[in-house]
Length: 106
Image (cartoon, rainbow, N blue to C red; front, side):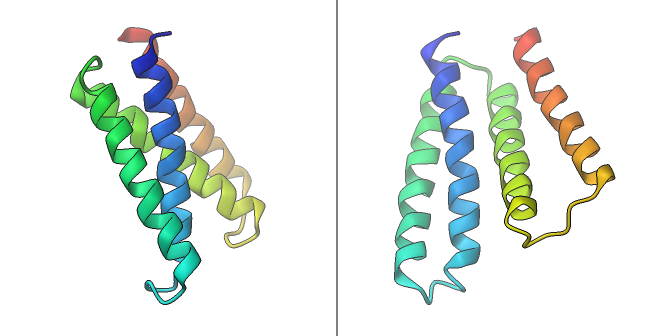
């Protein structure tokens, strides 16, 4: 796996961090989550831009969004901010399969 893929995966993980921090900031009214949001957002975008220098834009963006979406939804279910269900878990596993498939064909 090339460095671009490693950076892309980490950037996707940071997408989940900034999405969660955005919610926790309560409309930018809480300082710490707001700072985490902006830091993670910038780092995630920089990583995505770096990864796009070696990975086609469509694949890189889809993988980045997929990782962020799965981790954000999973975290919300783990912390009980969102109700977990079998169908949600199955659909998230399907999204993971699609991300792995994109990596496999790239």
